[in-house]
Image (cartoon, rainbow, N blue to C red):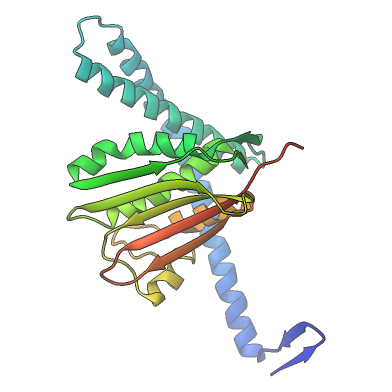
Length: 251
């Protein structure tokens, strides 16, 4: 039963159904709590092998006889290991209730770094990477968290094209100059309306080995940035994700 009172909408559920809804919410909270504990343990253990990778890459880079190609590969390993170390520290601080400081910076810097990081994966999968990264207005961001969110969306697009395809990434200012946009488009299998609804929920995924948390966490990070996200997709026609960030202003 439901009725309107002013602008509010009140809805009453039968006692049995209320208990069922409450039970589902508790189970979801328990799953998050268990996953949080496991994640904290993983992050603690993850730091040691990550440090080994960084130090060994640094040691190998001291060899003056390295070929230019091998040096570039080692530099990429070192760079990405450093990025992982920073993201790991950020996640551990978030678990303790602290957050990274905000900065006002151009989003295309992060997008360009992500494009460089996925170039090898794109070549392996026969994916053509088409970039249109324009200079845009700066936005207010937590750079490490936002980079992780954008990287997740780009990886989703790559994984949607196992047989190859085209990945298009662009940045732009909106016509009213009030927002900065990032667009990620793939030519993969696409998603139905039901799948688009499902991926917004935690523990729901279209991947055979997915956790169902990537999009959920990404949306949480985007909300912290007061950004909007829109999916456009149809089966057989690929997917386009559009993000809009408010232009950053000095406090």
